Length: 249
Image (cartoon, rainbow, N blue to C red; front, side, top):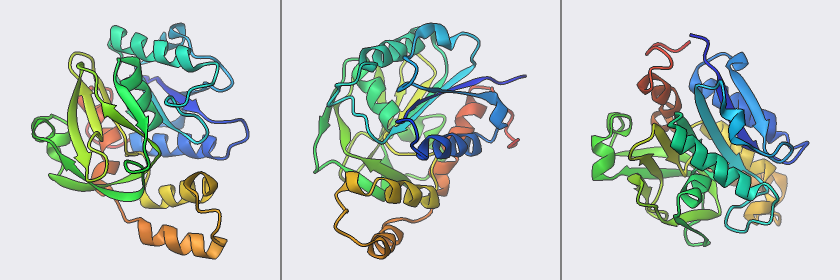
């Protein structure tokens, strides 16, 4: 089949992570880049009509936007888009900003709390529901994943099943109860090298601007490690939804 994937992005024009994010999702999905349509919501307001003709939606992170703080003119359109995806039961894999947007769109509660913020490679632990999940149940009970977030889910909406948490942030992965949707606070599309690239790009956002570049690189290296189990999730979600075969292509 000719797979068509809509990648929703939230990146300021000129941000080099715009292209980097797309490349990471394409690699994680294991499909050709021409399967993707990239929609940068900062430049084009999302509308449910844009879902037509797509088999799958992916949503990534955001360097400059927060659904907790709001204040951007496409905020409500984003939430409406999320609800439309759920209602239409379009398969979706969302990470970080996408995870937070889904939680907020369905009535959950988010918070900007430094005590819940995480950056680097963290250990994720499956819940009992996660151990029984068709996708996450194939992972070890504890595995590493890449993170970089200031906003976190405080209360999940009733429609989402909690699959995993971390020591600092208990809401790390969810599945919708009736729609083919999985979302993670962590970034399964990123390897440790990818996350170091993000860390260096958003150094100021993580309040490390007092460091020299050499010190920042050394710190980043010490904070990251490989995350092979998490990195398999995006591709395996496509397999689960019968959008691709089990062999990478």
